Amino acid sequence: MLTEDEQMRIREEEIFRSEVQQQLKQDTLSNKKTLKLWRALNTPFVLWLLSSLLLGSLSWVYSYLHTHNQQRQERAELHQKLDEELQFRMDMALSALEGMKKEVEQGNKFYSQAEIYSIVLKKLDGIGEERNVIYPEYRERGLQSLLKQIYYLDPSFFVYHSSAYDEIKSRSYGQVSEKSGNISKEDADLSLHAIDEAETIVRQISPWTSGGMGSG
Image (cartoon, rainbow, N blue to C red):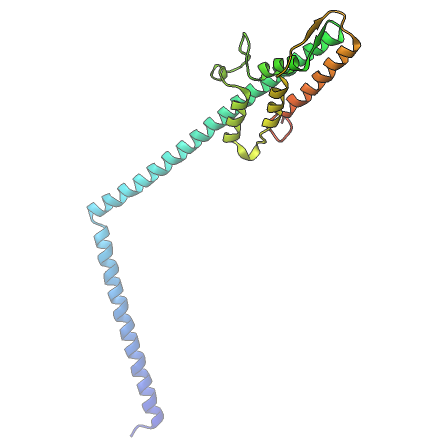
């Protein structure tokens, strides 16, 4: 006659064997499913399909990266061209102002405000007999149009100083008064003051937050 402890031990052993057998059955079924799946994947058609998908994915990734890098390079080149064009036009305007200042200081000519800003505006917009531009594709483009294009290309590093351009444009309207030879000191002072103001406004057109185009 088995004691109660022995009966308990036997029942526990039977439960353990039953659990082990159940686990072995599940493992066997899982292995069979894995083997069937592997056999299905190992067929020529499936291998060809998987390889085609992989090659297609790799080709798409390469094409995307190539296009992205090409577009980024093109944008950088365009940005540089616009930078050079704007810097050139600003230099032309500042050079014109310097020439006017020398004429006034030598007492040879008086420039009214409208005349000063009209000359500056033409230099900034690339208008003139020689169409003061570097790149031919910008020959018909005014300064404001170029500024807007840079803003579109790089808004995060760009401050659009259209107000300075608008100020120059508004001051170019008015009566153009010319006086040559032996101008009075009062006229000279008026011209020099207007020229200095114009120079300050031209420098404010710079679209870079660093304080000027081409600075670095």
